[in-house]
Length: 90
Image (cartoon, rainbow, N blue to C red):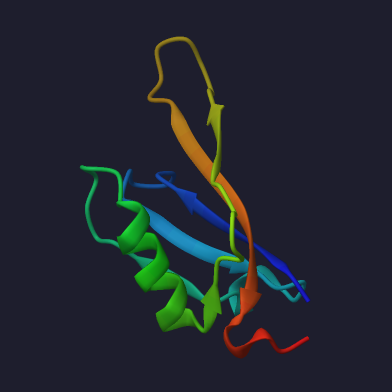
């Protein structure tokens, strides 16, 4: 079974990673990088996913989106990638 992992700088601007598991959003596993800059590296993201019990499938790539709220507002960024539970469990 795959889930979607998301990396975002929304809310107060700090980078957060969470895994959409299909349950209520307050139950999703999440990790805060507790910083606004720089963007977490690929390795930092992989390490955070492992702490949450997930891994990237071979060849998976993060896809980025801008989420503008207004022409003068800070742009929020969202990256997503499909992940699988560690150990390959379905």
